[in-house]
Image 1 (cartoon, rainbow, N blue to C red):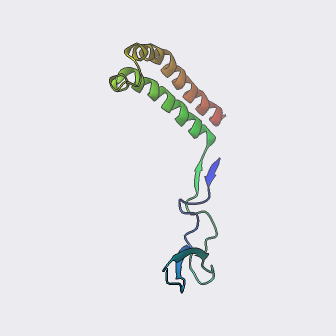
Image 2 (cartoon, rainbow, N blue to C red):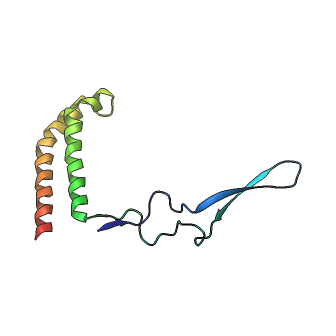
Image 3 (cartoon, rainbow, N blue to C red):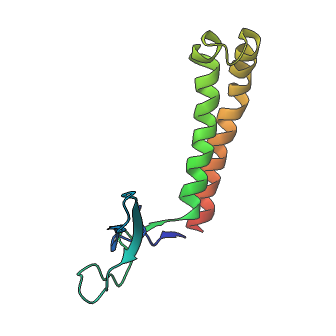
Length: 117
């Protein structure tokens, strides 16, 4: 299982303090300080967003993206139009999609059967 324990912002309770020196140059210094957790309500006991995704679903998703990538590269025509692949490579990807897509479907179904057993 994949478990995410933290959100995008690692520590919301930190803030920046600007201190000016008494010099004539007027330079400023920025210091990062941490507030006391007791005075703030930012204290958390568990993960912010408990997201649990099984490895089977991740593997099925990766295989599906692979199969869709072959279909997109072979049949859309966008990749050869912008010059990423040549027309010959696009034709080859069209032919390879006939082998890769059924193989991807077989793998997705076999992953789900292994997960059920």
